Length: 386
Image (tube, rainbow, N blue to C red):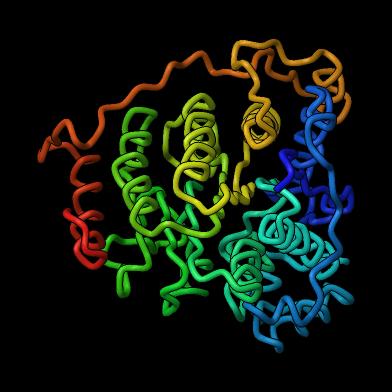
């Protein structure tokens, strides 16, 4: 495999736009792309534009009637009446919706093809990670489930074991649903507890035959608890499963500034998990195959661009010093586009630390109770000690 990572990008992905009042502002994608460029990462990886996913690819996950409906509402947004989840407050129809959604899906599928085919070891599509879309319905700002489509394409190409790790603040319900009965796919989701956040799924007991792993975290969980939870579950499962490809989803909405959720994670902890996913890919995945996706994230200036630029840099084997000053040229772009002041450094000033699970746990601690519930629900099904 080549030593250069791939960044999947096409300017037209910013056409995925639900409107001016919607929290999923495509400026977050444009600003991330500009920050990646400002850090010179284009010279350290191959920037590739894949074609949109065609109907045969979309139907690896999505029902034909749903794809037809998306195309129909895309041509005439005013006809959307809530059928198939389109025309709702969360997922309003917009002109070009099918084309923009298929293009984003195509970037993730293209990443899967490149990684599986040996064109690269790592590929990033930060416009992707639209993990809520169901086979027959839009949901949670997601029209086509590019993460599930990338996994389905890997399986179609011959992969026998694919792991999916989702650290978005919301449960990765659409990906779980797509592969619920498929033992070739291990889905792992860390998310805010369903009692306090959409989509109200992702309980530890949602384990199937052991291929679905859900770790719901108490509202207010910060860096120490979030990192402890990740390291108490993910590495052991990947070491056991030994995937041939790893797909990860890095929604930035776990951040303490995010307006739509209730975790208290810093940019520095997000970067630490990104780095851990990279390390785990090299340690436990055949040939280090890693596809990294974006996801949620609604602090569109202060958080999302920095978080995903760290992700791109890590995949490119060119990590950015968190203490580094954000390039002035990018800060000028931010002000010109948003009239907001951009952050000055690539850090929140935190130094995240956590206690490993092996050191023992506190049965009275809510975070430890959550971890233990997940381990007890899943690990015995996989022949592991809880």
